[in-house]
Length: 115
Image (cartoon, rainbow, N blue to C red; front, top):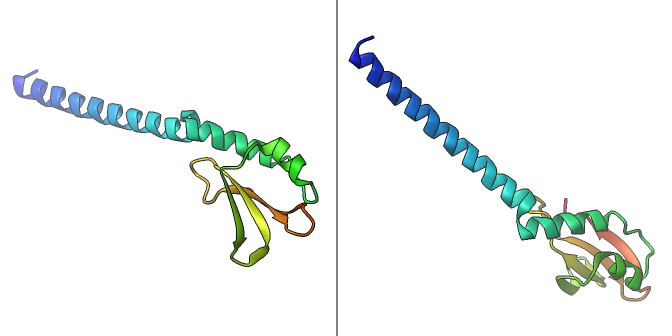
């Protein structure tokens, strides 16, 4: 085999190895953000807990399941007669996980799973 082909082979091997390392490190970064980071663990835990919520629960029951909210928002948008309790969702979610308490009933009237 000539020297020219040996050099081409080494260059191709180096490029392939660099591409493999780049893809592998990107995959690890994605897994970290989605599964292993602190925010992902909190969001995934909140997601699991939110599936235990049901309409009609009291505020105390809902907070016992979810824990302290990250934010509380009152009189928001079309839900002006409700208070929204908001929790961090998983990194790929499009919204906070939240539940809405009626001002009058003091019960869970709606649940948003962050989808």
